[in-house]
Image (cartoon, rainbow, N blue to C red; front, side):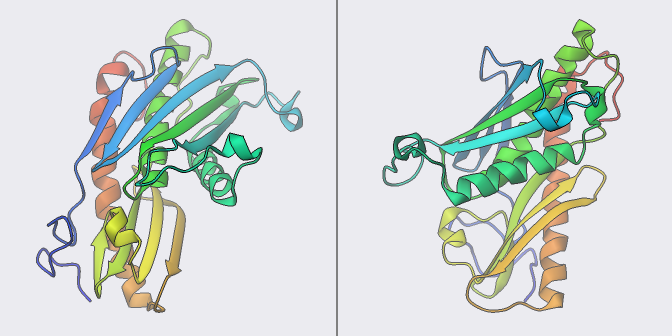
Length: 255
C-alpha cells in the first residue's frame, strides 16, 4: 500500500496524496471578535470567536483564562435534512466529542494565563458537510482565535501575544487498498481505515484518532498515514499563515 503520486484515481479525480482545495475567509461573521469561514472542498465551516470577561468556576481566582468550543451542523448541511439538536433538548455524543476535540486542540497551543479571567468561545457551525468537518473546524477555529487575540492585543486588553503557534487538522485513511489524504464523504463512508490527525505548525502532533472500519491496519500503514497527514498539516499551516498575515501586522508573534 503506497500513497504515491499515482495510484488508483479517487472518486473526485485527486491523487492519493492530493488535498482538496482549501480557502479561508476572515471576517465572515461581522459581530464576532474573530471569525473565519473555512472551505475544504465542498465542506464549509463558519468559526466565530467570542470573548467574555468570565471563566468557569474551577478557574476563578487562578489568574488563568479559558478557551472552549461548541460545534453544530445546520439541518441541511448534509444530503438529507437532520433535526436540530436543540429540538430534542440535548446534544448527541458525536457533537460532544467533536467540540471537546476542538477545545483541546486550541488549548494545546495557548498560554491560558495570557488571557487572565477571560473565556474565548469558538462556535463552529457546519454550513455544508462533505467529509472532514471536525478537521475544518479546528483549522478555522485557530484562525478565528488568532484574529480575536490580535484585537485584544491592539486594544491593550492583554499585554502580549499568548498563542504559541497555530494548530490544524486533516483526515487520512485507507480506501480501496491505498493510503489517501483528506477524505471527502464518498471515501470516508467506505474507508477501510479512517483517521483524523491534529498537529501544530512546528510539526508536533496534538491528537491522533484512528479506527479500522473494516480491516485492522499495520504499524507500517500507520506510519504511511502519518506521513501523509504531515504533508496535509504543513499545507494547512501555510494557508493559515497567509490568511492571518494582514491581521497580525505590527503585532509581535511567533506565527
